Image (cartoon, rainbow, N blue to C red; front, top):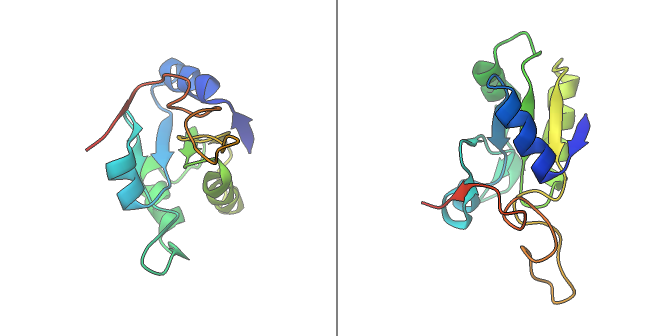
Length: 130
């Protein structure tokens, strides 16, 4: 799996219209915290039990096609869940998987706040809220 900064991921998505941006966070995070413009929501895990979505790979296959060659860019809050989800896709035969390092909200700062150090929103990339 390749790791990209948010700006690198955005550039890849702009350069390749076949690339998919998949937000793997919970539905609540996707809707109420916000998400990158154009992102498709497929939870890696979600409440109330926070178990891994057993249909994750299948849902992504439906979106990407079964060849596994279409670029798939994964994003979560900080880059951890998307990395785990990316590993599952690679194990399932996907060959072009990217993880957005630092995710949508980025790492915690010294005051334990996000969006102040790095991440998609910090970098000023397009995003929206419902």
